[in-house]
Image (cartoon, rainbow, N blue to C red; front, side):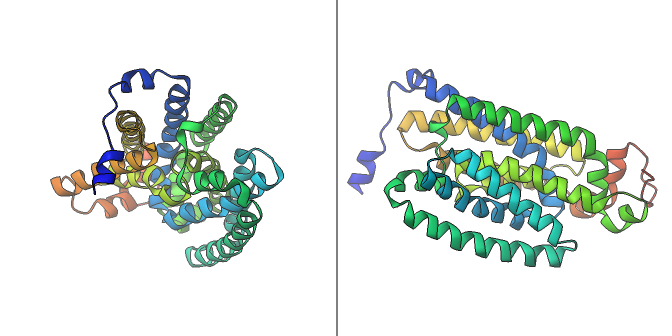
Length: 305
């Protein structure tokens, strides 16, 4: 116990630490990831894709370890495997049950491949650990450029497909009957999710991914069912988690991943305990968010797109 207390000590120079280059990179990189994760989180929860999000992080693991093995950038390996896995899941899983089977199958193969690559790349065990648990403080200038491009792509594509994607996510059967390309939207969404996870893995790691991609949106849905507001609140919670997490990490000189996830979970717990969730919010999300997104009054019928 005394050893633990000795290893967790207040750093009096924490403000100077926050002004270093690596901390600035961590702040910018973490903020970009928080923005992308907050924007996509609503769809992850409403589409019941939490398992897919978790699986994509693990599917990216062999990409990262494979990149380490051949000396390629970790971000490239993560992106190739996450996007590839996302396309497979999107194309093979039309219905929820089929999607879960496809996700589990792809995940099993990817995990086995990751174990193989990790064993072959044992000399780079520290980098492998960073993939599992994240290393926000190691974000480079080049990775910031990639993060900025990924986040811009997520925001731009969502600006174009956001409304029909809400419709397809809330009531896919009605959306398909109205001519909405549900399958294509699903594939596009999974690709966007893969890009976001590629970034998030480098912030909080594959094992703590939920803290940024799912928890903020799940918290926001306890407060409102309107998609735009959910996205805005989720972005704020994710940004708050990153910023506060980095400050706390600088104060006690510990990895920021734990603090980032802890702040996100703490906000979720506070919302639950405060009892601010509205009765019937899931039902309202299923019946009213499409109308809110489309800007038409709720009449009990799905809107014509």
